[in-house]
Length: 106
Image 1 (cartoon, rainbow, N blue to C red):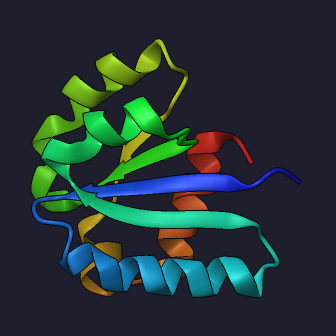
Image 2: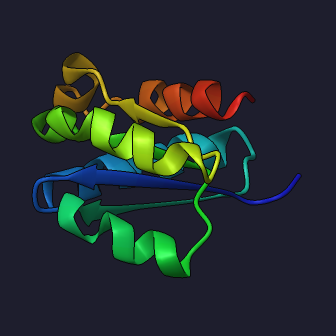
């Protein structure tokens, strides 16, 4: 199976780094070949211009950007979703990973 790349975007990229660690652990446990990373929302466009991403997940604090990114990424066939507040707050890596997989269609 090809490597799956999951990008998380939040206000500053810091609180989400713990969630990335938990998601990566959940992916490793499932034997998935994934690259998961977090960036501040203003850097998403720059990252997308140089890297192939399979799905973009927005932190609850930047959910207001959902329509903007959904429209922008539709032409690249990159699904966009918002991490549920409960899963974000609990740092539930396996649930957020499942959301990413669902959006990708896996």
